[in-house]
Length: 171
Image (cartoon, rainbow, N blue to C red):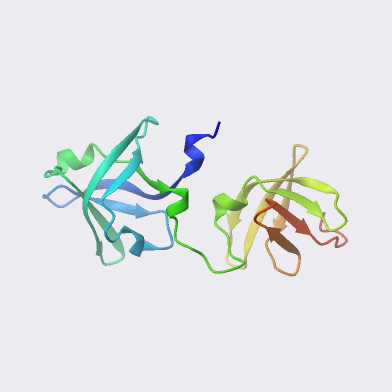
């Protein structure tokens, strides 16, 4: 049995009301804001964890911010009722990525092993820093920080594993 939460990916979060017509600000949780164009019916998770559907009239850009208008929501008070709702889409509807690039949710949970096949641990988090991402690997309760550099590791998406080069001092 699959965990239903794993079948969906968060792409936005409704924030405070914007203006007087029932719009709210929208925090993007995607690198592809164009994915909101034409999006109408979405799954949303309330702050208390309940799942509901939202009907979107439109999503607009206002300078460097985004605004969302939900169908039937016409006042700031009505819009504030949706504050902190997280908008999700099915995992299979995510924006396709170029080859050799991965979503964070794809990497989390992958096994990490050395080039000689020794198990290192599992990825539990991904830190985004300017130079490159860093994979946080749980190594029997100990945290290992592994730079996501192409010359250090390779990722096999189908096998759900990361193979890391055996460089002295890295592991």
